[in-house]
Image 1 (tube, rainbow, N blue to C red):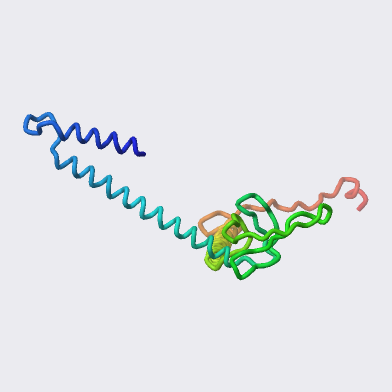
Image 2 (image 1 turned 180 degrees about the horizontal axis):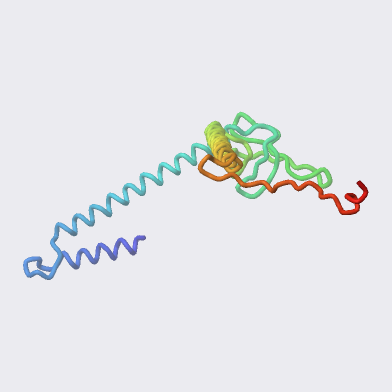
Length: 188
């Protein structure tokens, strides 16, 4: 990124150094416009990336505050365990190990926790909103399916309707009565 910026600035400086009256160079105001656009884009990029980082930091702090006994945690050093106690001095006691090998209890600072299954208020609100959106989409899909089924039912009924007046009805074959055989005629 820095090399690209420097090469653009060097190109602009080389073009701007030429005499614009002789017709070979770029006017100096174009150089300033391009430079101004680059500076504005850099400030916008820093501003928006800073906002994302602040939101992530806020969620992380909320998660740490929501940690309670029973939550699973993983430390920055890779130690996994279950919180057994939350102390007042911003520390937690985690239990690691198993029954077979024996349990170990470690007291660490909350800031050393890298991952946890605890959820802060912001994360809970976001998950609830996502769940509502998912349910609304499912309801919309179901209603769309119901509308499709309703629109298909009249079409199926139209196919089974009686022929209309302008259409000739299909003729039914005449029923023939059984003919008497010659033996029956002779018997009479």
